[in-house]
Length: 385
Image (cartoon, rainbow, N blue to C red; front, side):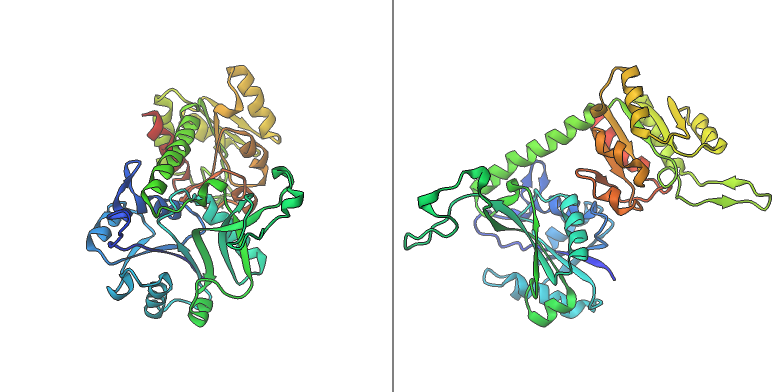
């Protein structure tokens, strides 16, 4: 069973000409949702459905490994065509497994993050619901055209902090199974679940004013992330499942072996050249881990540590830095406290669910021992270079 993300874009936008490829903070609009999907660990494949060869070529230039192009028919790219029409057109031709998960994601919601897709898909898997949509909670008071209140009693106006509010569809994405969409001819069906997103994602880009608002919000979002990365002074990594593939290998003589990735080693070297202190911390106490640490000329390496957070707190005191200036990558439950406390946290694609569900953690596309540490380091270097 696979999870397929489907992003429909067409070239005939009227309110904002060529909206989907218009530059938003230096990138085409549809880049932002494609990038979030590419970095979402729960997404296996991305389908960009377009009627434009120009759009297709621009999308290919992103070099996203999960991305495939589907050329939609002119009929289903017209002003009057519904989104369902192009979804059904694709599904009737694609020959997918009926149990595949289908995520309809909208390019007009560029504030959607990888974590939103990942967390929503996990919520969908455990919820038992047939389908799911993204919403934001609105605490505004609504009236109908006849002057009747819809969601509150005007004679007993609640305080905002005491008001439950209502969920509003934000159009960011919809989740369903292939068989349900083909059966019901709709993106939603059966028992419908709600995935709540941040209130800032309520805006869909339909009009020029929406564009200006999202431009500011996206710039602030990226500025915060860049500021977090630029502040990093210490980079720490777990070993097993991060610098290695979590496998334990034994020779005929009973020697214990581990597989490390040389790309990670080069990344560590490049990070040290930028003045960032680098180290490892592991609950194991193995000589081969010490050998690898010495080979990499690490600034710090801690072995046999049962309380990783306390150890790093003490190191921060010694270096006169705060935990917010620490980046850490881990994959298992013994990394949970440290990952939850540092300024910048990341996990490889092979991490356990508890780690993947840590708020704001960066979900890397590579597995441990296959370049995950290098991928994380490249993100930091992109800001520090």
